[in-house]
Length: 577
Image 1 (cartoon, rainbow, N blue to C red):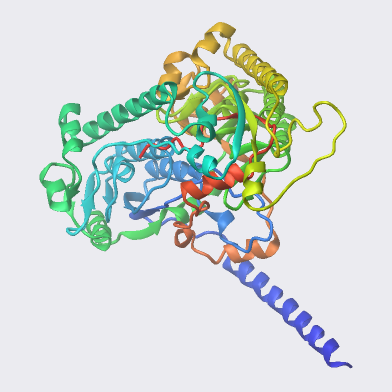
Image 2 (image 1 turned 120 degrees about the vertical axis):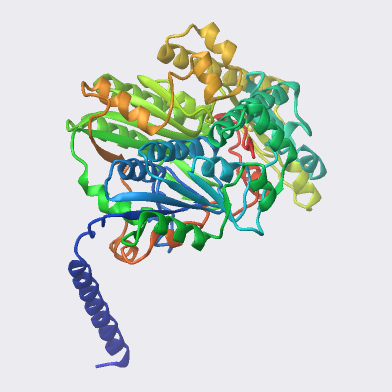
């Protein structure tokens, strides 16, 4: 026997034996342990909270990424715990939140329901600002270490503009848009905000600031004016925050845990919320409802994760998920959870058609997450009902598109491009020349045609006149609260409210227990499933999917801008902090 053959046989033997050992260990491990009485749940609040598992990421060896806790998992676990007599209290460890306001609001609502059940909530923050405090404020007792600082000083919103850099690089943008407020193109064509962009951003900031002030005032037993005055005084050292009624006590994380355990009693047991969710997940009965998560920028093909850009919602994946829900007779209704700034117009229209087909067969209820704007709203408007959080960013009914002419940059780098073509407009979408006046008009006509189709889709789905949709459209981004006032959204709330509507439309009572079927299904190789069972999900909670800064992400987006594509996409950088 050759040495090489012997090595291969040895490797194969180790692989087989290792697999058998892992299989035996999993079999011996058995099912989840029961939840003990007098349990204190501990929720290590993750910095990043997604709606679903991450879709396929080629060549990824991150075996823990797919098993992270999702927003639905958190909300359902908190609601289960609220009615579970074995759960006595809840401790929150909050250390940096990078979610949008809608997700924070939804988890906060679930925490309020838990507290309303008569069980105490303890929140510990080593620092943080508005996002972290907004979540913590619902607790019975809010604490920080004596050396910490509470960065509670108000909200800001920023917009990034690349025109100055493009000018220096001699890159010429060729863009058209339909809608006065469709400010996504301004990132490339302006160095500052247009009046329309500023008006829309001011409106969003006003809505979120009012929501923040009113919510914090109610939680801390103050008047809105008093809370607004405190925001003007911030930030605060920990003892200053306590003296102004913003904190209840000064404690470190471990001391907060000890306080909760001591209050519950000597027989208290500590259990992470993630493990509690695993132990409760198999206990639900009743009618089956589909939860379809539509996350990321909308393009054709399969859903995927692109390093540096994040999630892509593939139209093929979404159509398949909607078709599965429509043809599965055990599924009584569909909740379509949207967290998307939009994307390609054609892909959005393809998903819209499948939503409409599904709606013809069974109720379809949309639940909006942080963002359901432009193409995200396009696919939402085909549903029976739309539910949004007050802090959701939605609307942005408008279309833009174009290309970047890179020939000037090429010349700066000593590169020349020669093109041979046949046909008067064969080079219209070329990234090496500008549109001619005639080509610009043709492209503008195409953008306007897509916008009119967008208006008609919303008009049909929302039962509004085209003129009415146009008046609230024009590319303007609205808060969920404003969208509800304007008739673009039916109900304010989260997944809990969306499921209640789905049950009622299926002929059940709103408080009927139900089973959730998660779609689209994400398949994982055997080795990933094996490894994940031995990893504590809480240990993975602080890994972010988008490690790049906003400036770098903007340049990656510009470099990959699809030349000539027509997009129903909201501005990239609306972020209120």
